[in-house]
Length: 419
Image 1 (tube, helix red, strand yellow):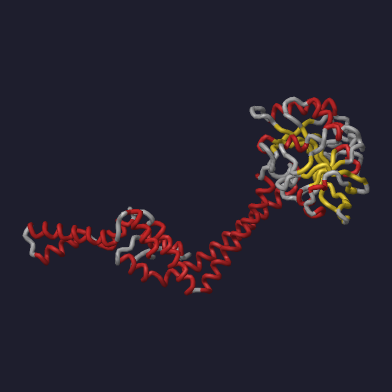
Image 2 (cartoon, rainbow, N blue to C red; image 1 turned 60 degrees about the vertical axis):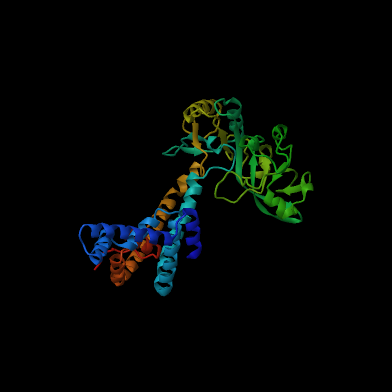
């Protein structure tokens, strides 16, 4: 490969001709010493060559100390690997198909596990966010569990809490019938408190978010924030969309702002939200029960834990507040607070899908093991035919590491033993 060789020579300041001259000079000096010890000229030359050893191996070891040698060697191995694989298309296709299936299955499962357990929210200082649940034992149930908030309980907890910097409420999976831009269809919406966007550290792409006074009187302020995707899809990216009216579940709303494109909502792995409305319009966005009573709990709550504060501190304070303010019927004894870091899906969803994910991860791992075993069997079968070739390589001075590296690059791992 003349390009890499010329580049190597320029950087290192050495050429193959320089190396040949140095070896000849060393042989001549060694031969002179042998002649001085009493050997004939021909015998002295043979003795000098035996003392030096394999010249090809010496050259290779010297080149190891020159710049760009590893790059040149890698390109040589890749070219050789391609030639070997082209000579055996059936073997290549079988090996690649087996490995591809195993890797694809594990990549898919890992993506799901990452979304469910490890992915942080796309907001400012996401590591500080915690999800807040109500923990209690329903009457007639054997085991306690988590529950969401009614609006009165959320309001009481938010006004009295001091450990958390702020608490925001949201119902992020509201199916809403929206009429806008001449079309009517169902979109994924969310009902959120006025402090939802500021607490998350999100800035509007256009317009503004909800004002505190727009989330104080039940059913009064019909305002909405739409997503960038919805804005592009329904309004063609018209910057004059702020102030226009859209109909949500039969109620006329005014668009006041557009959320940034990089914010899809607070439910990782689900469909992104297309619009948001304030919690005082909860009866429009949530029609299964009256969220303003303690018996209806549609709201999830998320808070920001300041640096240096612990979950146990916030849990103790919120539990005391919930025990005093909670009026929800149907529970055996007072309820408390349960806090969880806002990573991946919410606690209930993770509990529901954990066994399914474990089963999928086990199947994917088994598939990868079978794929590797299949390829290993193919490689071992081909390895027998190459023992003579490897023996020849080793006999002419090739280093064992170079033989192994070349065979790894050509997907042909085998036991290297000269015959």
